Amino acid sequence: MTTVEAVSNGETRPLWQLLLGIVDRPAATLGAVLARRKWWMWAVPLLIVFVCLALMMAARAPHDVELARQQTQRQLESMPAEQAKAAQASGAMGTFTSLPFILGAGLVVGLFALVLGVVAQAAVLYFGALVTGGEVNFGQVFTMSVWTRLPSAVNALVQAGFTLVAGRAIQYPGLSALVATGDLMKDGRNPMLTLLSGIDLFWLWHLLLVAVGLSVVARFGRVKATALTLVYAALALALAVLPTLLFGGMSGS
Image (cartoon, rainbow, N blue to C red; front, side, top):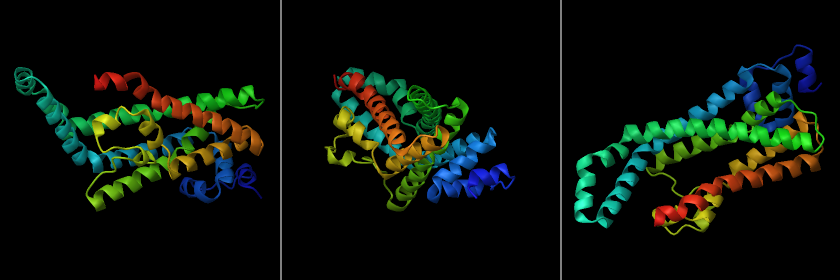
């Protein structure tokens, strides 16, 4: 008996078992999730992802504050004396490099980016599935998209643990170390670094779940699900690099 059949027969698995099942039985788990059609089936995993991201930000916050202060000091040293003195007197730089501001702003931006990212992912997969002949419901695609983000929660916990144990934050995640120079100001303007920073095992796990999810929600075969997943991956990487391409030159001027 499959998990979907078990759900239809009333044998519902607890949510915590489904969260664990996304690791070793993703297809059956996503089938069980989509069969329930309850709002908490997307709300709970979305909350879990955000909480894990918040824990990572909290662990990184002291290191980010120190980094922000170092960069601010460099900017002050590059300014004319009178302009630097005026900037220090205003107190704005002190506010922007304080722990409460950096952590609070990070949480707000992180929540907005998470929700926007899931909605955008669901929209791309929904319309992509429709164009390629799938019969899908946006609500189910959205729920599936939320569950495919669970690898980012694991990634956030790993980074938080590393930061607490090692006493330093990971400045070059993913494959970005391959093109990093060590100069954070210069690296921040490099689109290749932005592109590679998001590519790691957790992102590949996310793509695998997307392909599996498409096979469940749209009943696609392996080839069609993989092709649409690759299109989604290319769009996601392009959107991640776009701000650096548009504004990277401005930050260096």
